[in-house]
Image (cartoon, rainbow, N blue to C red; front, side, top):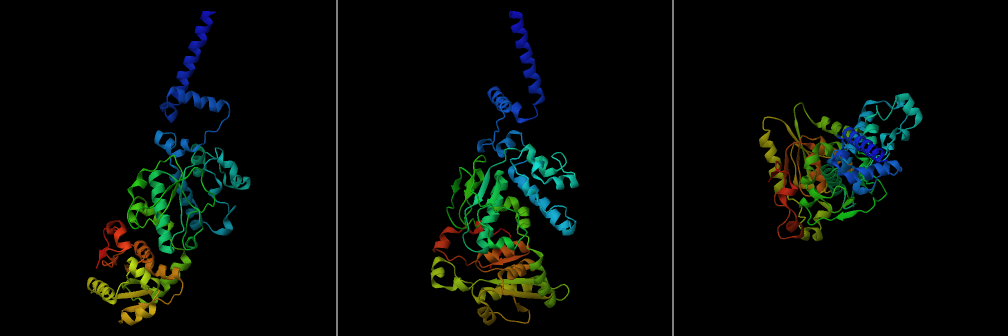
Length: 405
């Protein structure tokens, strides 16, 4: 009897050792014995370990997942873009996108329609997104934007910060609001009108000042990102992703480029001049620190580019919500005014120009950042000792290589 018990014990130990060796390359081998036994027990009884505390991000850190939740999200987006720009609509077998492949679905190929799987020979082994989603079965931590706050430029800062923090901490980004500017860009599908469970809110301390705390958010917790987040530092780690997210649709850039081609000679340098007035010229906003730039700044900035490109033809293209004031305060044979009435087309002009002069406001900030050329900004903004002046950190708001005049 004792020999039989000893024999069974030895067999059990041998089985345990063999199983451990087989799994040593996974995070299971890194867990303690209790964790290993709990996992085996859950598998035996068919339980699905899918709570937030066991999310993909932590599994990624422990070596189980080969990608973070953000990387899975971005892979799907890249494949959607590739399919959109490379395939003709009439050749598409099925227009359902990879968003049908749920992150939590362990047999994700079953969520793709059978006709599509059969025609394109899709399986969890052959389909990259499907395979990744299968491996990362507990990828369910999210970071959401609290918005909407403000208009186009402010919303873009909120989305960019969302992308940057999501990449840094490995979250899946999502927006609770279907912003109107989503129609401007080749945006990923981040609109989800369903709150994540057990969310915590991280509010903004100061407008225009980077909040370093976002770099250490618990990656096993769902979060809501509040505030305007007007700082390039939130997404400095995700510049390429943000540029792709804010790729303007061709229907807008085509019109902007057509206008520029009509006024430009070969080799001409196009400089967009964004002049924010309108609501910013009101006393209430001026008291807050939003003082509109004057004609002296605009003429000095244009002269800066004339001197820089003195051997070339320079064209200044003015966009503004106070065009009458601009026409009375800026003039010359090299100054042109936007003919467009839609904000998105003025925005497209900024993006399509070689360089940008900005005044105040985040609309101009984003046009300049996406343009990628030389940017000149009004160094007198914001007014000191005002609400905005006390909160905004210039080095957090303006990129280092931009030029203040």
